Image (cartoon, rainbow over all chains, first blue to last red; front, top):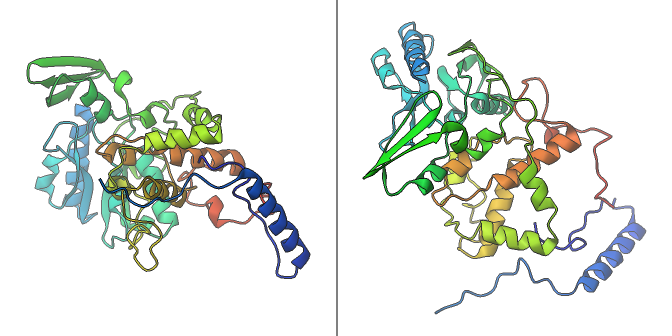
Length: 49
Length: 315
């Protein structure tokens, strides 16, 4: 829909898989940091004329 | 088409006279050209109001939701598939319905015809192959194949999939139709290209929700856009809210949409929001081999678990 690949990620982690959660969280953070700040799907304040 | 109308009136009259059904759902002539209106007929005499031509693009299954009486309904291919979906989703029972199948030759695109006219259209009549459009000081004749609704032009289920009787002989289903060319074109765009494409597509949306109201799938008592606690989506004209509405609505139709085109037809500003539902339709077909509304026995993909479901996007 116009969101860069990598900004949206899916994962299936059981409550018993703490290590996997850490790995995924770190990987997601890194990927998103590399992409930089999100510019799409951001609501700006209404512009008043 | 005149033969269809005669036959439709005759069937409706017979069903009502015999009290087989309490009411019959069909189309009557609209107050403006190309806008036939759905109508319930309750007495045999009223059956004379029913018509059938190339302007019956509204999906009649939309009017069956949670009805309790016995209803006779005229169904094109797409209507019949949405009737199946309604039955599967427990919105109506099969025993309540007398389905009169109408083999469909495709409906005409009112947006396109209006765009091609040189002024206000006063009258639209048709014969076997042509659509004759008349207005103030102009007259145009279109070949009906050139002005079909976009979804009708790529339709592969013209014949009703479920019916008790037929208005006419079944029509030939077109064999090799490339249904998803437009979707593939969008898929091929870059992320930025997609963003711009959808920005452009939805630019004119006024959030009137006509697409939702015309859609037989959108029968939730409270739609997510109308909820205020929690408020899932902003109510403004902000492009983010507009986009959220269209994407979310499309996802609610995943595995259920039959591409009847009612949403696009109902849109007052002519947005082709079918690209969203078609993408999901394409995914359903490619990943799950599913086409909505073809069988009363099969369960839809979002309703069934299979160990071999494609899930390569999940880590």
